[in-house]
Image (tube, rainbow, N blue to C red; front, side, top):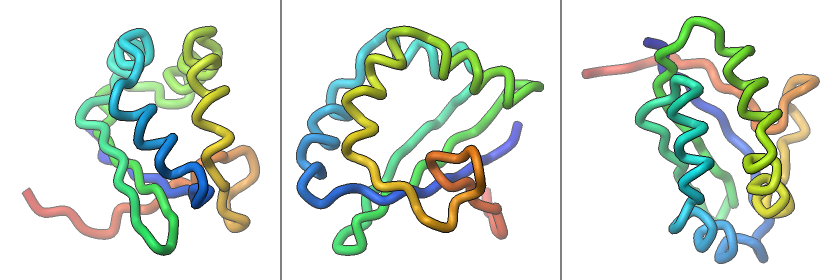
Length: 109
């Protein structure tokens, strides 16, 4: 199991919409996340900086392949058509990233 984290900005005028969407995530999207070996997935919002922080546990063996399956799924692409306009990627993210991946520097069970 690998713990992972990521961060992205959120457009201030889209915060209410983003919360509304995530209050009722589509069952197909939730099932897809589970099939991609992701568990304990949480997204936090930090205002007034308007940052979203996502964290999860990855229980698979090929993260890139699992993420490619998520990206290729038509229902997920439809979901993203609603969520992506809410998000504001960080200028400092690596090439190819939408959400900027983070390094774990501490964990305590």
